[in-house]
Every structure is written in C-alpha cells, then in structure tokens.
Amino acid sequence: FPKKTSYYMVMCADLVMRFMWVLTLVPPQSGAKFELPAYLSAISMTIELFRRTIWSFFRLEHEHRQNTEGFRRVNVVPLHFDHNHQHKYHQTKRVGWKVLIEIVVVTSIVVALSAVSVIVAQKSANLKLSHERDL
Image (tube, rainbow, N blue to C red; front, top):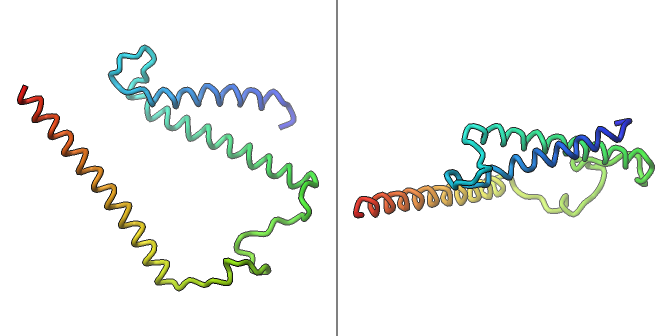
C-alpha cells in the first residue's frame, strides 16, 4: 500500500482481533468478568480466520516485493513440479499402492485415536453422573 498508516491500522486491528480469540480460552462459567458469551464464540473464530487471512496477504505482498526488488539471483522461482531439475526426491519413485497403504494407515490411526478420545470422554461423563447420584 502506498501509505504506511494502513499498515499501522492493520497492526492495531490485529492486536484487538488476537485478544478476541484469546477470550475464547476462558472456561465457561468461570465467573470471570471478561468471559466471552457462547454466541460470540463462532464470531470470534471467524474473526481469527479473517485475521490470519489478512496476514497471509501481507506475507504474499512481502514475498512479491522481495522477489521483484532484485534480492533473488533469478527472476523466475521454479515450481515444485517443474521437471527440468533433477532433485533427490525424483530419484526415489514410490509405487502408487504403497502411498495408498500409507494413507490408509495414517487415517486408521487418526480415526482410532478419535474413537478412543470419545469413549474416554463418555466414560468420564458417566462416572461423574454416577458419582453425583451417589451423593
């Protein structure tokens, strides 16, 4: 941007938006005076996404300016799928079914861990309910 004030305004807005997200970390019903109401939680998450998007645009602008101001030795940045260069990762070819098996294994581990966490949370809730009934 031609004016530096726009950058400073975005920095101030970033500070405010960052603290809006931090307020979501306060536990509900904690009695804190600055507790975020439940209906603002989704809005706060949307604001955080917007904040990160703004900074990604600034990062993109910074990279573009660095590339065009002569700090690079070459004018063209090669893409990762450009086959004109021989890299080490091109020398080892992986078979498609091996990659598929790797994806299935990682997905299975993630699903299993998710299921275990849900089961543990349900058991914990059931134990808490039974303990409250006994009192």
